[in-house]
Length: 320
Image (cartoon, rainbow, N blue to C red; front, side, top):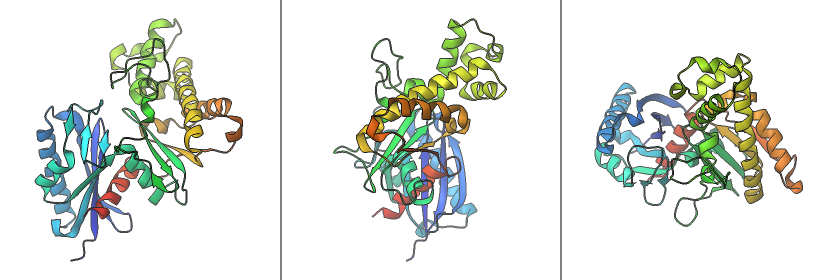
C-alpha cells in the first residue's frame, strides 16, 4: 500500500511541534504541546499521542497512510532511539523515546538529535540546498548543532557527535550550564543565556535601562530584544556580548570541518542584525587566515520550527 505521508516531531525544551508532511515537503497539518507540562514522560507521551491522533483525524489521514514518524529531540541518539541525559528536559536519564512512542501510536518511529533534524530540513528544503558541507546552529532554550560533511550528517561512533553547544568557552569562573559543567557556550548564547546576561548586567552595571522595570527573575530574551529594538543601550550591549561569544565559537568550528556556511535557526535568530553583525565581526577576527572571508553566515530560510519538523519527517520516510 502506498504510504504518502510522514510525521515530523520537534521536541524542544519549551514546546513540542508536530507536523504531517507529504512527499513534496508540504506540512499539511500541525499542532503543538508544552514539553515541560508533565514531570513524567509517560504523561507527556499520552498527550503527544492524543495530538498525533487529532491532527491525523483533522487531515483525514489514517495510520495506514503514514510511512513513519521521525523525531528530533535534545540529546536524541539516532542509533538507540533514546533521549539520553538531556539537560533542558524535565525527564532525566535514558528515555527509550522511539520505542515508547511507537508502542502508543502504532506507527514506526525513528529519532535523532533536534539540531540534526534541523540540518536535514535545511539541506532538503532550506538554505543549505545544494550544499555538502555546512553547520546548522539552533539558538533556542539551548544551543544545538547539526554538522554535515560531504553531504552526510556527522553522528560519531555513539550517535552524539557535534555537541557544539557544550564546547567550553570560559575555562575560569564560567557559568554553570544545565549539563552540569561550567563555561559552556550554551550557558551564554542560548535564549536562556541572554536572559542570564541581562540579569548580570543589571546587577553589576549602574546604566539606565528599560529592563529595570521588569523583575529580575522574569526577564526573557524577548524582553532584551524588545528593549534593544527600542534603542536601549544596555540591551544592545547584551546582544553584542552574545554575538561576540558565538563568533569566537564559530571560528573554532570552522577549523574543524571547513563549512561552506553556518546557518542560524531558532528563536534567538529572530534578532537579525542585532545578533548577526557581532557574530560576523567576531568570527572573522578569530578565524585562521586560510578560512577568512570563505564562510557564509545565513539565517534559516524555513519558518520557525519548520526546519526541525521537516527534517524529522525525512527520518519518517526512512523508517523500516
